Length: 325
Image 1: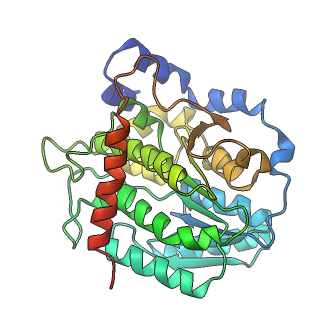
Image 2 (image 1 turned 90 degrees about the vertical axis):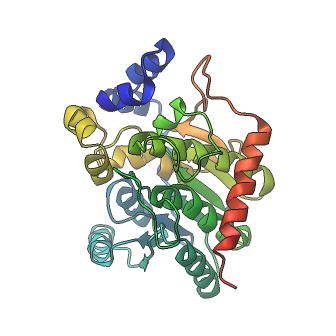
């Protein structure tokens, strides 16, 4: 568990978290409590947008929704991989209402442009699933001068969500689900170094901080957009290309006990389609279909309401500087 040691240090509560996430066994145990009929639903007539939908959790989520008759909008960076994944989904599900959209979430102006064009073309979007994420091995900036993983994991998610809110609000039973990570449990919200300009750049720690920011963002958006059901979830540690490429040591040591993409996607699918999920309060954090705390017991990771509001204010100001006029 190199990655957990790396993220967590050696405090008792943090190693308790480490021990609680023996992945495959944890999922199999939790799944015994799942209500099967929650997912026995038709999604015909409902539209879902999933970022990073050509592999891993994103593809598994798209497949599950397509099987239930939903219209799927796959938002992907690589056209060839996206079209290949779309063909797989259509072949397996028989659902041809699967559409590919090419977008790199690290290109901030293009996120705005994509969302605005989508609103002009489509009359409804019932569910947005922010799944795409990026772990960088070293600090890099995009053409706009933004640190790439921040642009992808935080600002891109914020812009896409905020821009699509008017369309979601006009649609029936609107939901926004963001795929976070348990790594955020050992991160306190940091708003003074959003671009990771100061200090040594540690990709895993930066990623975990971004996942904490996603949780705070979800909580804040839920307060201001009460007609939409917001949620954020930890999929468990999943055997995906992102984990293999972004955390190779962790992946090598844990490969045999990681979850499958389908197991990792289960809670996202449940949050997206189940009636039971929408009955829970908006803005909460989930793992294995259950609301779970966003902080470990006795943790030092709590932040003030002022800091959390400040994050949204900073994101809003930054987003506006890249908004097309």
